[in-house]
Image (cartoon, rainbow, N blue to C red):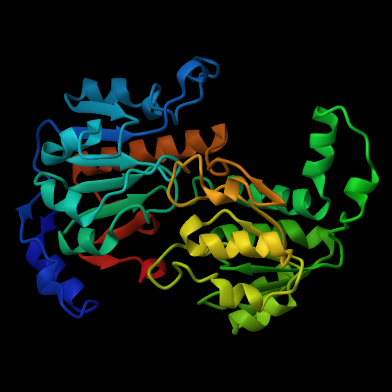
Length: 385
């Protein structure tokens, strides 16, 4: 069966990538049997905003718009925004849920400990893109399937990145704040406002989002660079007008603007540390809509305070939601927001539909679209290896 959980198969697959798999493999023999399933969704709470748009399906109140459909099929659907701590609502359902649906925008951190407690768990779905809130190695070792709605919000994120680049380059926020505060000081904005044309922009990662960003930057007549584990074919490179840079640090030293588009993995966690940031141009602008943990939090703060980073913008933090005392809230020349880039109404409709499609396939024992799998049969998708 497509969703079969065979622990021995998972153990063999996982063993090839782990030096000591025996300490991590949970020997469980579970499979997607017919009958009612307990499905738990963890989404952000919208409060009064939930009723303001009928297509606002990504919140806890509207629950991806699939409650009626699931319950008509005899399944139990529990939705909560409460996901942290031993007494949270999610924790109460961990022991007997079959499917857990989460989002990157309000991530429920699925740790190895939670996976071990979840004796009936078969499927972890991400409504959106980016499943690093799941301990993927533990999920693989347990024989779980992890999947996400690939491509559901790539346009949304790429557009948001372009917006953030322009906000930083044009020094937009100080001018906006002047208007709010009843001020008028053109010099206080213009002294560090630039054109985007002619600037060197590099993306760290050129997957679906990175490529869309490069395509959208081409009309601005920038010098476009990219670093990725896989080089684009020459025809696509020529169409986009981007140059491959094999050496990351060499690329960073050339860039006026750096955009982070790489997944969060063991290799990329903390990759922008004090030493790497020091190799970048003084006055560099950074946009990060990938994951907050890719950056060394304090190194970014220090570089913004010193002026080495002239502007930092993104919507990703670690942890999420960001605590009130998170230092990125208070560092100079930042244009940070909550995690919103991939949860536009258009994106919500796409990832809600994609989630429903995968649940339907799961109930029928059918395979998902191949690109949606993050963990399958004990193996991680290439971008997470």
